[in-house]
Image (cartoon, rainbow, N blue to C red; front, side, top):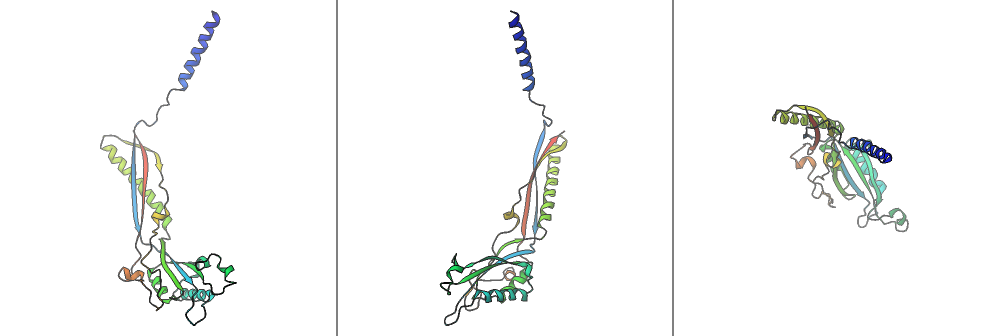
Length: 248
């Protein structure tokens, strides 16, 4: 009988301890408000990235124009309009529609090689100046691939701060509308960075083919399409920040 009594006491004590451990913790923020603050900005890009595709070519009855000459002429044209060497980069160096051009052309010297450059401009006027000097025969493609701004990181930081402040302002007037008082911020969800949204990735109306008669087929010119020497279309940067506030 005594053993049963002792066992009952042990089970009773363990039961009380388990009940204490499983009690829900006190919520320090029983009343909260979640809001989204937004901020956006239109930025005129000062970095315009253009891709230029060059290839070897051969006119009827003439020798093939080698890639070395095409490259030298292109670099000379870039320097002539004031493009710094640091703004010129090789994006691709390959055969023209042939993956093993440099091995295969040893057997067939008439295979056409190609090279792709990427040029960074800070004005649309400079783009037009380069187009006027391009070799129409050698240029197979010319297009704007993306735009950006030299202070894009600073602008992103400013917009995130503005978005958080906008969230606090919204939360304040919403709580006041129901006679509540705003407390401290509990969580702030930073928006994800987006290279596709923040940096315009749309092509301008440039030609993908250059006619052999010397006329740039379909090329309007960056400044011309917008009615003269104007800036390229603006980059829209926008951030939405979710903030959770406590209510006092």
